[in-house]
Length: 259
Image (cartoon, rainbow, N blue to C red; front, top):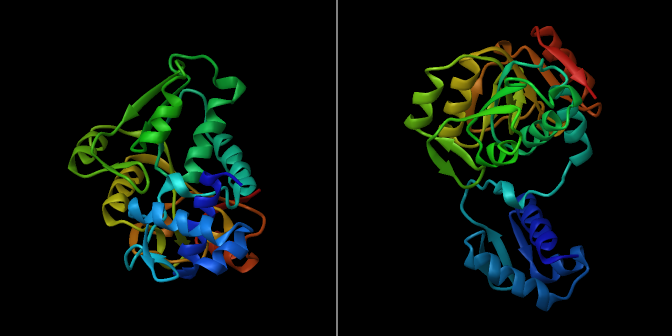
């Protein structure tokens, strides 16, 4: 296992459990205790965790794993979801993409669609996610509009009044939301209130809204609400989604696509 893969695995275990012992982590990853101690020390230097005697704890009370350290958890599901979401977007449309691992896969799925290899433009993509803009900027057939704003390191998303200023001046055909939680009662949500505010504005500027979320996000709540469930037109998720949960979204008026 490479150091990068090991760090990702350690951070995910830490987020799940809140605390890790050196010996416990070494056993989980099948490496030596000395390797784990060194990893913990280096991650602590980057302020990714807090070192303790014999182990580590998460950095802060409310912890969000930065995008660059998220592993391919639910990777196949996210790729299937992304392909389905990309299929909902017509050539020539203006599409808004928020940040996140699933929306990044949506951007990649759009980039490889055969019918979007040419056009003037083939798509207009509006995003506040720096990593998505970076990936798509090399596609000359896509017009890329970046919102501006202050970069949030956990998600690579631009937030704040500068982003508000751009979004308030445009309209888009479809907004694709990546969320950390989506519930019929509590709506779509993010960890950070400033990020949620930008995503909410993106929804308000869109003709239709699509939530792209694997089944682990459904029926969950998070701190900052993006929008109510009934403002979402389509939910694209995976086939592991709970039947009752899917039914509740459909009864709320959403079209649910499970792939």
